[in-house]
Amino acid sequence: MLIQLTEEQKMLRDMAREFTRNEIAPRDKWMDDNGFDWDLCKKITEAGFMGANIPEQYGGGGGGIVDTTIIAQEFAKGSASIATFMGGHWLASNLILENGTEEQRQKYMPEAVSGKIFAFGLTEAGAGSDAAGIKSQAVETEDGWLLNGSKAWITNSGVADYYIILAMTDPEQGTAGISAFILPKDAEGLAVGKFEEKMGVRGSATCELAFNNIKLPKEALLGVRGKGFKMAMQTLDIGRISAAAVCAGISEHAMNLAKAYANERTAFGKPIKAFQGLAFRFADMYAEIKAMELLAYEAATTKDAGGRCTLDAAAAKLFATEKGIQICLQAQAVFGGNGMSKEYDIERLVRDIRVWSVMEGSTEILRMIVSGTVLSK
Image (cartoon, rainbow, N blue to C red; front, side):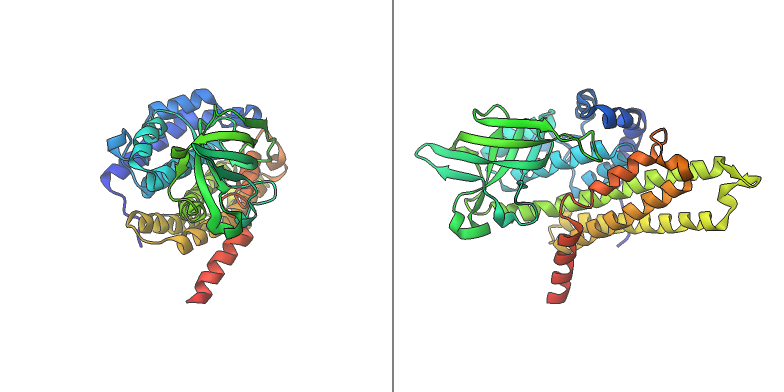
């Protein structure tokens, strides 16, 4: 399928591209050194990107998955951290949009548009890929729920206003006993740990969360009891599409940095781009980036059309993360020894792209999903 954007989507792309160039890219190194950028988050909200996935009736932009894929790719060309932050926000808010009651949508969707930050809490210290190993529990009471447990490696934790938390409500049922809950940041009994000192995407916030006898009202339950795991897996399709787009954006950024350096740097009396061994790197980079885009937008288009995109989303994310790491390393090699120095942005991009081989499903899990689905046919 060819990527055929509407005129509105082309305008969105151009808007996101200009915003990235003027506001995001200049702040990426600062975020790598200092962490989450609240001022930039405010500008993103004012520009309308936070609610790009929210229907117009709730004050959002009314866009679909293709729209958020466009934004994610463009933002990643300036900062993997910001693209990661946005992906986490969209994923969590989309869970409410697709599974919440109308009352929940009316309450939380306008907040997602207005700059309140959302986060999705699945992973725990002992349960990442193995979601059935979740230990957090929510026990039903007369007037609501009592939540206990913990989460780890949650994107936007520590800065989020609302968390979508997966917890066991019927442990004997395995994944069929997992439910989802909306948890506000000011809930009594919620403890937020220190910010993780990550290798990459350091401008996105990641903390541990602990739940100590948190009392939640009945309406905190999101969707149907016991359907939390199914809801999460369907939403992760969206996360993986966004991840593929982010990796395409990071890779294109890396290629362009290497291109500029190859045009400026001379060796043996001529620009290094004149050496065929180096020039051929760019042919491979370009072809692989275009393939990343096609896979990501194919899955996004399928999702927007109401189709099941689990296989294509997993394949897109698998290809993009694996090839993205190779592209960034190849781009870094163009810089020679300079590529190892923090004076050059390429060093940061190598660290950023590496993180994505773990987030939104590790490479190994994605290979299991793709191979299992293909062989089942």
